[in-house]
Amino acid sequence: KELANILMTSVCAPIIEENQFKGLVGVDITLSDIGKIISLIQPFEGSISYVVASNGVIVAHTNKDLIGKSFSETLHTDSDNYKALIKKTIELQNSSFEYRNDSNNRDYYVSLAPIVVDQVTKSWMIGIEAPKDVIMQKANTIFYWSIFIAFIGLVLLYIIIYLIAGKIINPIIL
Image (cartoon, rainbow, N blue to C red; front, side):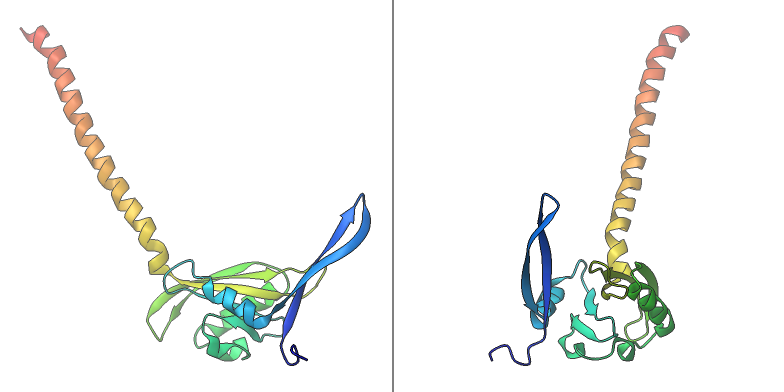
């Protein structure tokens, strides 16, 4: 009775010993627990993560207000691109693309991956959207530091070559 009207999913794995089935171990996870886990996935500042069922309904999302809604109805921009890649992902293929969010004028990188369950032909998917400027910030910092260090290295190399060349040439000139 305490589990009535609570949506759950089961994660199970067979126990096989010496090529013989011995049993099954599994755990039931409520969709609200999956939602809590998904809301914690934020690899970058401002990123969004979600899980979408094979029927297109949002099962878990960083924004809890979107849970239970059709994913395609929540799309504002670039929905054709999304819909094509969602279809690919549900058919067990990874996909990614970039889009510009008109509401905040930021470019986002979107990565979608299927949640594969044994021999299922259609699957759920997990998606992560991250702002490109946040992703590129660290790469750009490393790039600029590399240029600065290379410049300092060239200056030091010039000074060392100048000193060594002077020590070689001075005895010859005198």
